[in-house]
Image (cartoon, one colour):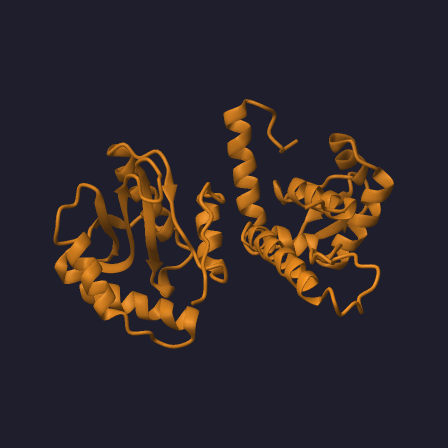
Length: 153
Length: 147
């Protein structure tokens, strides 16, 4: 467990670090850098620059450097579900893996969502993404009540 | 899904030993604790030794101890030593061409189920399973798995 980690809300100046960490994850997962700058810009605008009560974009800072982040929010009645928390991204710099950064981020977002009335956390993960699936399971998550279905069209 | 006895016994033994890698437990003690066949478990243990998940400790107070990687070994890793989880449609004649699309659809459905089963078992490490068991034990106020 890394005890020098600070978890805080993301700030505008963290954007480049988010892109850098996501690029590392991209290489790990896709074997190449997938440019998602536009996607993260939109997410940043929505989760960082607007109201933060129900939207959380947290970063983990170590030695004044952003080494990981987690994004989620509280939503009600999406897919018919009462208020619950959705975590849709958690990424940790490859150099900081296995030090407990992801766990601290996940614990913090759960605590903050719990403070606004959330008692269930949900997420979706690609079936081939074993690292992330294993991480969420290690945090106690299990297969939930919703089944994701899809159709190729 | 129904695990065969060897897989189930192996999971029990590995988790029991991994719960405290410093301890040595005999096959008889594990079998008695879980009410399973000592003879069958002994065979399972030999397989687990062969695959490096446990090691035999000889002499007085000997038995078995965990020698695998708690953070890396998944439930599927243990199960696959003893069985293949892939469903097979038990068709009496595999050459019936008229039934092709129906059989293919049934096979596709069983594949979907198999994939989900595999992903669940492949993403639960021994460490996660033990952590969850301990959490369950604390909340249910029942005896912990650790002896």
